[in-house]
Image 1 (cartoon, rainbow, N blue to C red):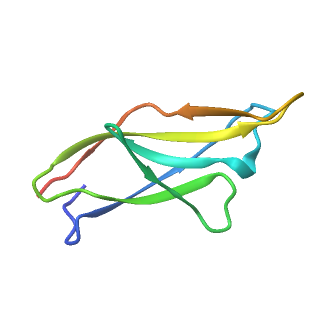
Image 2 (tube, rainbow, N blue to C red):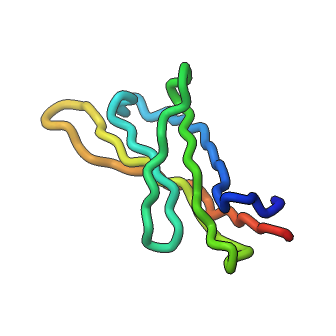
Length: 95
């Protein structure tokens, strides 16, 4: 990816699951870079897509990140917290 003038880079993700107890209204999506969690915003008019802008300092040319989803499941008894994570991705910035 080419270096942007404002050092912001858009990432987006689609989440899919066959888990029948997943409460889709409770999903919170994040981009995880090392131990930092960056909240993602739902994409307008979509129920399973999120996007975020990542600030990458000019001194950094490579980052590794993954997507993290936190949500509740509904079944018999009280709701439970659960999560899912994607594989790791690499964003390489070229001058």
